[in-house]
Each structure stands twice: as C-alpha cells, then as structure tokens.
Length: 231
Ligand SMILES: [Zn+2]
Image 1 (cartoon, rainbow, N blue to C red):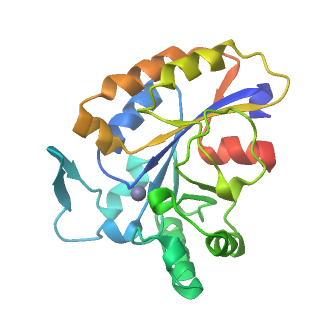
Image 2: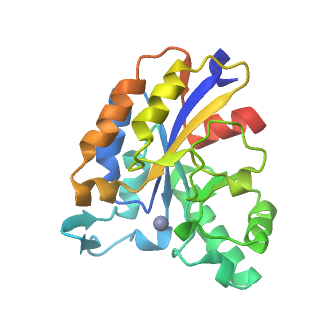
C-alpha cells in the first residue's frame, strides 16, 4: 500500500487549461502528483489557440500536441468529450461522450484512461453503469466529505475538499497528525483557472509546502492512490 505508507495525498483538477502548468510546477517542486481531467473536443489539433476571459482572468487552452508534454509525470483522465450533464443524455450518447474522450486520451498518452471526473459533478445510476461498462475504475464528483476514509464505491468518489474550502489547512493539520492503522487519503480538487481568477495561488502553495517532506505520506496520481487501495 502506498509504497509501505498508510497515508496518501492526491489532486484532481478539471477542464484542461494552461494554468494547469503552474500547478504542475508547484507539484513537481514538492514531489507531488496530480490528475488532470480533460475534454478533448475543446483542445484543437490545429488553428488558433482557444482562449477566453472569465471573471477578469485570461484563460488559454492547450493545443492537442502540447498535452503529452504538459502533463508528463502526472495522470490525464477523462472529463467527457464536450462537458455535458451526462445524466441528461440517453445511454448511447453518454457512452459516446465518454468513449470518444477516452480513445482521444489514449491517442495522446498511449494509454486508455482508467478514471474520470464528472462534468458539473453530476451523474445518475445509469451514468455510473455506462462508466462501468467502459472499464473506468474511478469517477469523482464535487460533493466534498471532509473525510480521509477509504471509499468502496470509486465510481461515486467524493473528494475530501476543494482547495477553497475554509477547512483546507485544518484538514491538512489533522492529516499530518494522523497515525492511522488503515489507509487514509487526502483528496483535493478544483480548477486551476480559479487560482487565476481569485489570484490565490498562495493557497495551494502553502498547502503543498505544509504537506511536503512528511515521509509517512505517499504522493501519487488518482490512479496510483485510489487503485492501490481498491485495486
Ligand atoms: Zn469541468
């Protein structure tokens, strides 16, 4: 388990934009790893780089051919092809949304993704069924539970908290002080463009700095952490 450790920290960031590179720079500096959930239809193979202004922040998307290098050393997982509410689609369309994104990710990385994050955090029992059929092993929602406990239903996985959660650093302190007999996971999620909009990169910098250097904590991607426990 976790290279002989009982505690693991993992990150999950959605939508695939170039601000992810700033988070990766921070994670790499602290020897940490994350999972980045992308919608491949929004990342063009040619033409102009997509960009937009959101709440005053200038956000740029990656081009397709930049993805492999951009996320090197981390995990690319699915966020569906076009970011719909998956639970509102009929089964065949939901399946196509997921499978096409997965095949695109395989084309980029050479490996089929094993996980995803639900667009808008929403899903139905049928959505979960489709993911199961497609061989996905974990899927993350957005409903935080402030818990480090192992979860048995990985296709309805609940994160510990969002990075803007007022409890973030309290949870970090609790996690550092834990001396567990069973595996515990600290799972943080968000979007890196939120750091750009809110100009609060210091939040994640401080969090990583606080959790770094504890040799009883394993740092891994979602796949490395979640599937190690439930594999
Ligand atoms: Zn999203």
